[in-house]
Length: 115
Image (tube, rainbow, N blue to C red; front, side, top):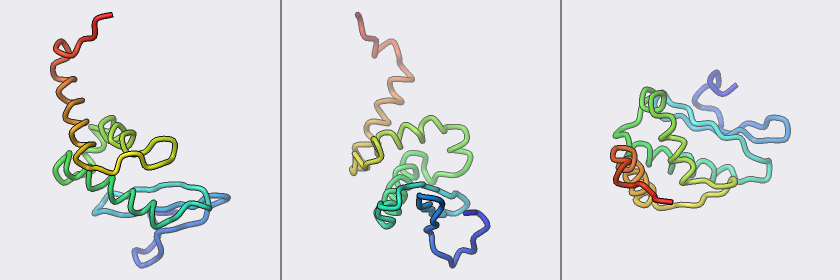
């Protein structure tokens, strides 16, 4: 439904009781399904915000980055959105949290919690 649409058509589709909002960046498609009452332009901005953070984190994100590091992409998304609402607007904060997470994974013995 999304992949077969010509590039000149709108980025919004109505499907059942939802809206499908998508944006293409190079060869990557980002697709979001929201309620009919949600603002399409805000969702497009959230997609763009997510892609900008992915670009900074991976250095020009591509399909292979998302395939082999999908867990990191989901972690970034979890930092941005909680319960369907945008929670963190600062790219620097998200990237700092990701750097802390990466450091913790590299040196787990330094970050042990004694119970």
